[in-house]
Amino acid sequence: MIKNRKHGHIGLATNDVEADAKWYVDVLGFEVIGKFPNGAGNNVYFLKNRDVVYEMYQADPPLSPETAGKIDHYSFDSDDIEADYRYCVEQGYPVTTDGIEELPTFWEKGVRYFKIASPTGEQLEFCQIL
Image 1 (tube, rainbow, N blue to C red):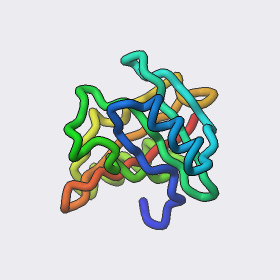
Image 2: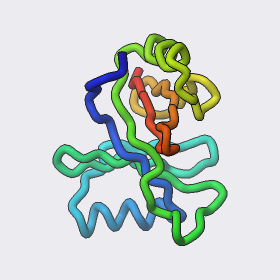
Image 3: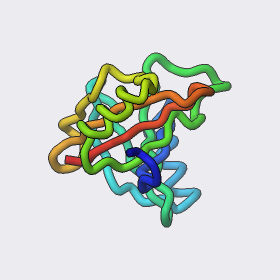
Image 4: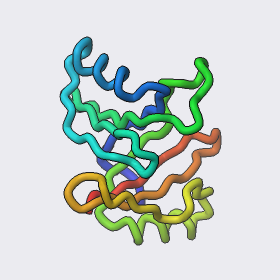
């Protein structure tokens, strides 16, 4: 079951991740709790303010001004990414990633995640920090 999961983070795609992350820190008082390189050589920031965590990353290709900085996905914590993925596939939820994906440069040992789409197309991610 994937019900009642702890909220992990909110994903934001931006056209200038360095400037936007700095603004969140300087203006809103967010704390950088993680900064990791992605495959394209850009930084991905995890920013926290109280109970809210944002994952902020550089959009590639760049987004239009109307979509830049908008919420890309909501993420929920997973303790067993394989079981969560199997459950979602069995239920017929549309998986929008290439199965379970992995980012070995995130956190100490990497992360594994996948995304599904809600009926309105909202991206919901399940993420296990390894």
